[in-house]
Length: 314
Image 1 (cartoon, rainbow, N blue to C red):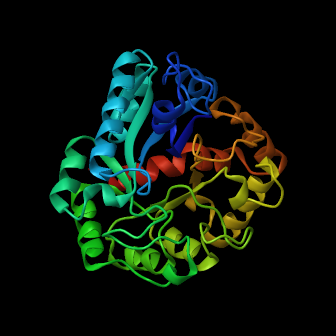
Image 2: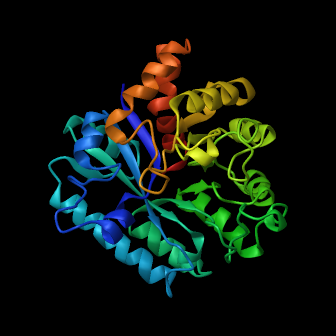
């Protein structure tokens, strides 16, 4: 049916855990080109994830990952190619290539500089997750109760405006509740929660409340179902049944058009029923069992993502 996934951390995992033979073409992780082909992927969004507690210079760390991203694409240009919009997706599909979108997970990589944001855009970045688990120049994370009501900083307002102007996707996963509502108020374009689930189904500050889901849907955005077990349900396994429960709930609250995929592959606990990108058929089969129509399943897998990409990226 074709899959678009809004979030994976594969590039960093290759760099940090990969052996001499591990690459984007083939590795022992959740995402590689062979698994993407098996899973019938149209596009994968690759996050350049920066943990502020583990690096001295987040901008430099991000640039190193971007270099590795492009090196991997160059080494595998028969199977995968950079994309920055719908026309690239279509061109790559015509050539039987998977589309690779470049994203950043941690707004501190721009170091409080709109000029750095523009330069990342020039390097091909088309989505930025405004925060991870630490406060930065843009705003506050949702990982601590004391941050939850805090909104964007004044610089964060500037970032929203400039991302709208550039044609970059604003990602509110990890952002405080207050920051979410600031983005909803300020952004003139749809935005996404690239890898977040429903808080009503699993109490976690990383998930969206029902009101947030309604606001996101009204703005024309999407939320990507996250495969991390602690954001899905009880127990120590990421179960497909839990994913379907979240999808049912989100559909009832915000409609089918607000649901996409954001697996968080290669950045999550590895006790998974869907062990890698090549096993997406397990989710498709469960959605069919739950009486989702083929049209609804296609919206979840890629059509909703295609709509948002077309609405935001210039």
